Image (cartoon, rainbow over all chains, first blue to last red; front, side, top):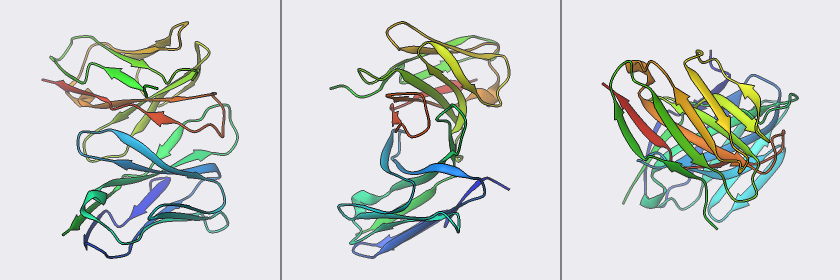
Length: 111
Length: 114
């Protein structure tokens, strides 16, 4: 079992729909990242959070430390949101900032 | 300011050859991490360097090595290439090397081993 699990693996939505991507993890963490990866590979960091909720534009990320669960929400989705969304966690303690990644959620938003 | 840069962007090598990938961090960032992303999977941690010293190493064979230079740029070296080394190699830089520092990713180097 992977230490970081995402669901769904694939998601197709119509433009304007509200989208939720879920991430569950099984290890103690110091921070959780939501990342966006477009075809061609480049990764962009969307959020880094360790508690509560963060909002940036149409994107909202929440985390529940007790339940070891985080969600990424996209409101009023648009075709340009189509990408792979990846959840990654940084383990608590230790001297490194090594990230452990989920396998990603492939999102396709259709016009 | 330039973000994290990596070179080359694409590379094709044959089995048994050696490859060197390069990464320049964001100006002022002292930590560089390397990740391998095989097609269809999430990235896997290979190395982290901070202030020119190895801070962490993932579960990769000794064919993989890295180093960080005084200007904080970094090289990832892979010897005796195997077909399974074909992947996107990502570099990420952060201000410091410790827990709590946000990482910024480069565009990656896509390595194909034939």
